[in-house]
Amino acid sequence: MVPTAAPGVSVRFRPMRGPVEEPAVSAEVYLGRRAVGNVDAMFDPKVEAFVVRFAHIEQSVQGKGIGAAVYGALRDYVRRVHGKPLASDSKRSDAAEKLWGRMSQSGKARHVQSPGERGGYYVTDSIWRTLASIMMEAK
Image (cartoon, rainbow, N blue to C red; front, side):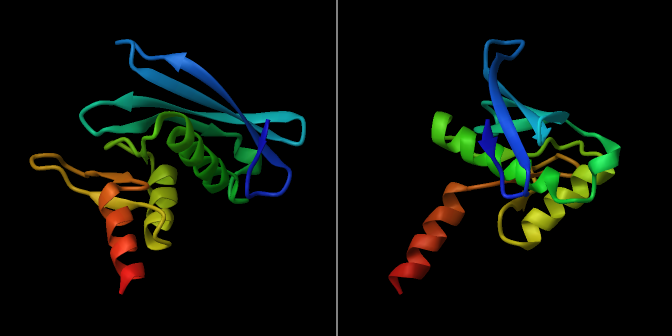
C-alpha cells in the first residue's frame, strides 16, 4: 500500500494487461482499511501515456480530495515504473472534467487538443513542460 497526499488514503497498484497486450495498471483506493474505489489506466501508444479508462470513488467519500490524491499517486507510479505520463481519456464524466480542470489550473496537467478531435485530453508531466521548466530554471 502506498500512502497518498490525502490523510488516511492509500493505494495498492496492480499491474494488468490491456486487450492488445499494452501495459495497464489498476489503483485500488483505500480509506483506512476500507476499499472505496479504483482507477484503471492503460498505455495508449497514440498518446504515449497511460490513459485513465475507468475511475470510481464511492459517493459517500467524494469531494474530500481523494480522487486528486489517487491521480497524483497513479501519475507518480506510471512515471516511476514505466517512464510515461498519465493522461485523461478524451471522453470524461463531469466529475473527471472537474478534477482534470483543477489539475490543469494548478499546473499539474495541461489540456491538449488533437487535430480533428472533439474535447481533447489532459496530460501530466509533458516532455514540453519539463523542458520549459528546465529552461526557466536556467534563466
